[in-house]
Length: 102
Image (cartoon, rainbow, N blue to C red; front, side):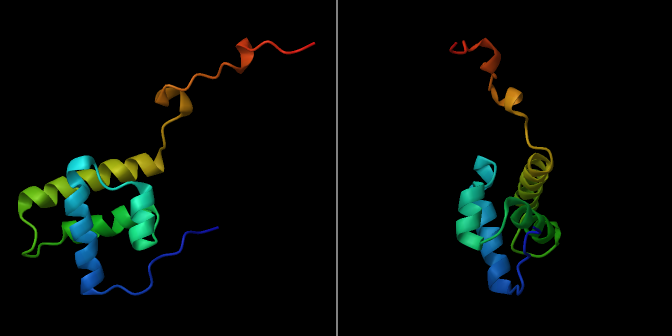
């Protein structure tokens, strides 16, 4: 199944994406759940859109915020493209060490 893309974009929608990005940037971006609840988009869809908006040179963003948003987008898009393995999250598969009933 292919994720659906947002169909209609307005300046207001773009403003909301930027506001959300600005509010959550210091925390590394909003959670996948918050993004879905707010926009109905996947993480990847949201951060791709934010990357486009933050990359534009228009007045509402100063360069510091622009660079912060672009860095968050790069990090989150990298994570969504290459999710960490369970071992890297500290998960240890101990199924081999469990005793099986006889």
